[in-house]
Image (cartoon, rainbow, N blue to C red; front, side, top):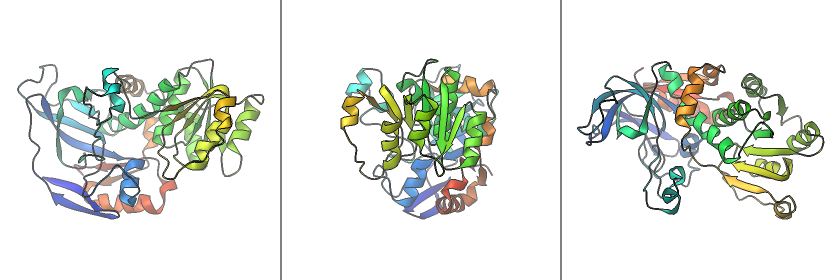
Length: 339
C-alpha cells in the first residue's frame, strides 16, 4: 500500500509500505483524512528533536473500520466512521500509574516517535478509536487537535470565574478558546493574524488582541482592570510568547504551556515567586475525545472554518512545501488520502 514518507528534512516522497498486521485486539482503519499540525511542520523543517528519519508523518486521523481482530468487542462495528487517539502508554511509569497516560514517559505518538497515519490503512487497538455517525470525515479529523486545546483548559482548571488569555489561535489554540468559552470563562484571544482572530470571536472569544499592533500583556491587563488574567494558555511555542504568558497572568494565576519552544527561554524567575504562579505543562489529550466529539456534533461553533485547505494524497509534498513557505496562511491543512 502507499504511504507518504519524510525521508529527510524538506524531502517527501510517496512510497510503498507493507500492509499493517492486524492483532487480536486491533481494528484495521481505512484512512480518509489526515490533518497536518505544527509538529508535522517542525518535522518537515528538521526542527523537532522527537523525530528521526525516515518517518511517515500524521496523527490527526479520520477513517472507517474495515476489519476487526478476533478479540475486538462486537460493539466496535466494521464500517463505523472513526477518529483515533494517536498516543501510546506503557502503564508502568509514574504518570501512567496515576492515570495520566497522556504524558507517559515512553509515549510514542503516531507520526512522531513512530510511523504515522499518512498511509492508506492503519492497524490500531480498538480502544483507541472513537466513532460518530453525525460528524463528517473532515470533522472527525479535527477531534484530536481540538482535544489537545481542550485538555489545556482542564490543566488550567478553567471555570466561569476566570478570565483566560489564549496566545496563539491555530487549531490547538482554538480548541482552548472554545473550551474556555464553554466553561463560562471570559476569553481573550491573541494572534498575529486578524483572520484567525475573527474566527476566535466566532468561537467564543469576547476580546481579541492582534499582537503586531498591540502588546498582549499590556492589553490583557487593561481588559482586567490592571490585574492580569487568571489563566494564560501558551499555544505558540516561541520564547517571547512564553515570557508574555508569565507577564500577562495575575498574581496567583496559572500559566499553561502547550507550545514546544524551539529555543531556550530566559525568564525573570522572581516573577514565578512574587506571583506564586502555577506553571503547568499540557501534553496531548487525556479523556477529552468524547467531550470534543459531542461538542462538534452539536455544531456549537463553525468548526469547518478551521480547515484552510484540502490536498489530495498525491499532492502531500506540495501541501508541506506550501505550508512551509507561508505558515501564516494556513490554520488547518487536511490530506485526502482517498483523493
